[in-house]
Image (cartoon, rainbow, N blue to C red; front, side, top):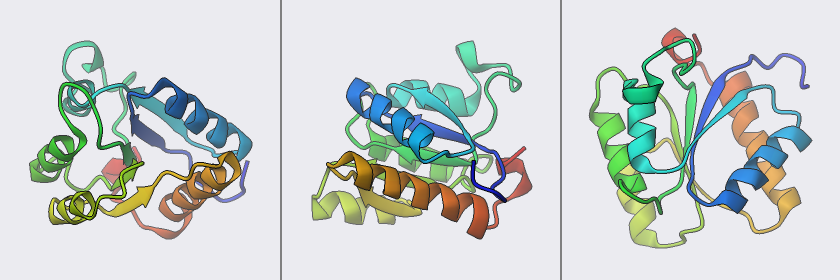
Length: 152
């Protein structure tokens, strides 16, 4: 594990099983010292964030310090999740990183218009993906100052 990093919960909103596994492997290979919680569609992500249904208990559904959000999601799309989170007073301070394959300029512009903190295109090569995950984690756990409620 990297010295000095503080453990935090990271919410991965991703429906692609291979991308979920790659992200888990990247966390393990990069020795990222955070808990990765996975939701598989936009509706489940919003339920988690609003602590609805199976996510009601804050002890088992901790508030994420950072959200890694894919745009191409079933039920509720990534841009809609982004918009809802950034409009919610209790959630809007949580940093959201769009992590997607989309290179569409419209997606980049719309994401920033809706308040995304960072837009990252998923690298195709695993080692590059590990580097990106490590960079994201190190920035948000070592460099950035987050509101205390985001890391409790």
